[in-house]
Length: 338
Image 1 (tube, rainbow, N blue to C red):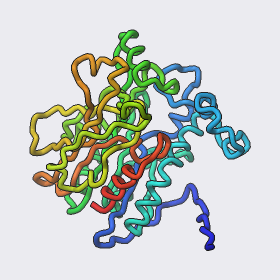
Image 2 (image 1 turned 30 degrees about the horizontal axis):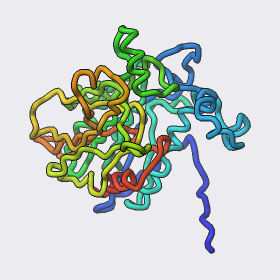
Image 3 (image 1 turned 90 degrees about the vertical axis):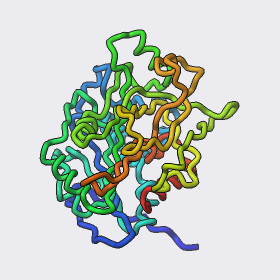
């Protein structure tokens, strides 16, 4: 029996450009957060911060009680939780690398070592699909700079590019405490505070690029009755020209997913590809208004000077923190070979 050798891990070094290979996409992940800002948040603050790893261990006990997650081997503060997000995309990176022959490049707006990296030619030159993971909290005031917007616009003129935008949830955006509590009881995750607002950077980018989408709420998906399995997507496969939903009946179960509210009625420039049924047994303002599903996958085909595609889907669909299925892996493969 052959032994699989784990490759050595590297950290804090310059990215090595990937050569273009016809038909083989070069995928890049861009975490929009300032790692130091998020990690240095005062843990006495109730809202708009990530949990510490100690809080995660307490809530998820005994899932993280093995030696690998101990204080000798893993960060126990907010930084540990940020590292969980990094580790949770490793399977996606592995599958994408096998399908394309290229390693997935991973960038952060401000990394652990304090280096600030704007989206510019250094990232875009060897990227075919840029995945913008909007996990920066609104109080961090991350905004897309004019030069970044110009660089992305120019990059999207290149045939075959794809900008994947992943603004995350917006929980508790109201000053109404009763509504905040209703939202909290709806998603049921004790690690999410009554107010947790994400994706200022991605929002600013969407506004600048005329992406008519607003990320709102944090909604709990419905499950198949009598099981813990996430309910199947409601799909619109007739407009799925990219084949993103081929052999994809479900996405990832995450208890607080954003609704991608469309702010236009133009169905030619923006296509809704999938909706997710909502847990109707847990009251929420969105369902009280008569909604039973939320928008979870949107595609904007090339238009005018933009030769590239724009896709919107939540970043948690690329992680293994909330379970994983063959369906989700099919979605990953569809995206990287589209």
